Image (cartoon, rainbow, N blue to C red; front, top):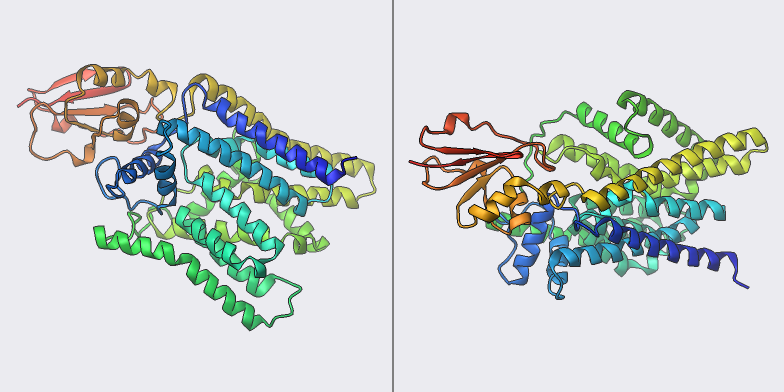
Length: 478
């Protein structure tokens, strides 16, 4: 007779398989989702395999992000598959492993067997997880490492020092925001962890050493960047966004994780504040926090770090993408609150009410995930591999008439993905007019096109202009 825990283990394995299969289904027709940073990661990784170093597709030195994801791409690009196929297989395996480990985590967080299974099921088919794992983004590795670090810390951190050092180092080498995990580790081990016989000073010293060693590989990478380019990264100081603006975006996108975006942003933020305040009140009053202090700490430190970095540096704007790495934690805290209230309540009406709220929180990501699976299957994942790019009139023109031309564009990444041609950014177009060069300006009707420069003042009467459905092309003639 199989006991309940073993039965749940089997269910987690089945969900891991189904989740992995869903990634294959989403990428079946048009391939893995690609954005500008995806292309830089892929180019630097495949370029490294040729022993030519870390470079972006435009020829500049790769200092954009930490190097781990490019190193992984370097390894998997050497296994014999086309790199885009290899990345689909990689994401499929990583997602299956992530779902299985989330099952392990649910065993620690929740009490009810039903809630444990529903939590993992929700994440398996949720839009939020699908959004990341169908794309060539470093967040896929980042989420997996966060889960592994949590499980390692919860089991026995004193006996897993080497593993913790390794996983924390890899986390920071994946995303600079991984430093929030190092900070969380130090605070947790030094000030929060209970049931220790060692003095605080001993724990503090050990935690400091591990934290320092964990960031050494990334520091070496930053030194390399400085030596090669005189910059430690291409992220500059002086953020264009104020702290208040970033805080509002933080609330707006966090609310979109749990509440449909069809609802007005201000209403979503209000509902999020009510839900968050209610969760915090319950945690403090019922002392449920003491059972989940590590994941609570990690989510808080991560969000604060994201807010600070975005407000100081000219960083990518706070977006849905950057909050998803802690979505599984935030979802767990809300569901744990509702589970606790249902277990404590003797009133059947109250139990039904909380069950309805729980169902709504779980149904929303599932419904959105299923909807986007159909969209991705039929039209591709939004990005350079989508049907709009594959059927682009401009791409067809380039392949037919411009393969040997020198091209400048507002989307060199889109051209590179769909033609294999290395092109130049329009901002790098030289002052002297180069006979025969093409300036291809894509319109915003295509995914990943945010900036459409106005080149009217740079056009000579001798130039030829071709107007296409999704772009216009300037052919320089002196």
